[in-house]
Length: 201
Image (cartoon, rainbow, N blue to C red; front, side, top):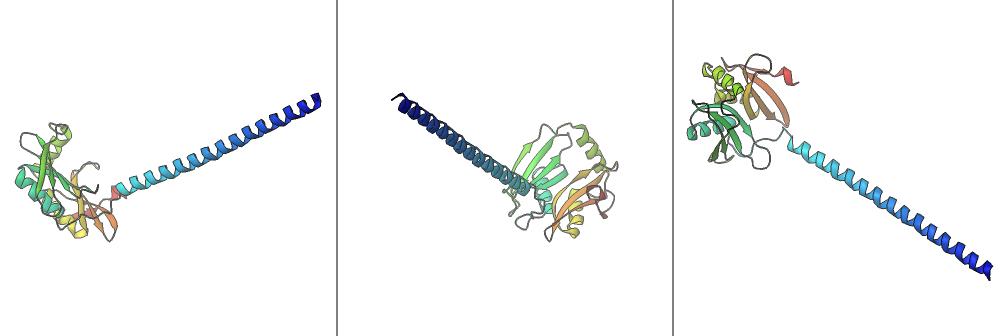
């Protein structure tokens, strides 16, 4: 009788141990599946980030960077320091305009109609030393942001134009898209001469 009890106890213990191992095995499978899913989600997020950073996206509609700058200046008089096509799905242009008192505005332009969607004062940019230096450099320039955008348009569809002083000499910097390829250019302040931006190669 004792022998039967011992055997039954050992069998039950084996079943419990086997069940535990099975449970652990199932847990490992679930953990592995979870890790695989997390890896897939991370890759998908990275792909989305890459898509957001895709600089080969061409502006929607026929409104050019030069048109957007002209519309922004008509609405908010001043000096345009930059124009940027927002490829985040909105398709709007954002033009940075600095007025004589140093106040800076971000003017949003609709891609198709050229209608001004709004102008918001950028307090972070007000009285910024870099902006003042850029404004001073542009004041005596014979090429403004609109003319720089027009000059760079010979290289492709302009998606961004702004000032660049990375190399020590201030110049207009423009980004273009042509045949699905991204290009970066410099436009001289004293002429409409366009050269490839070698610093960005």
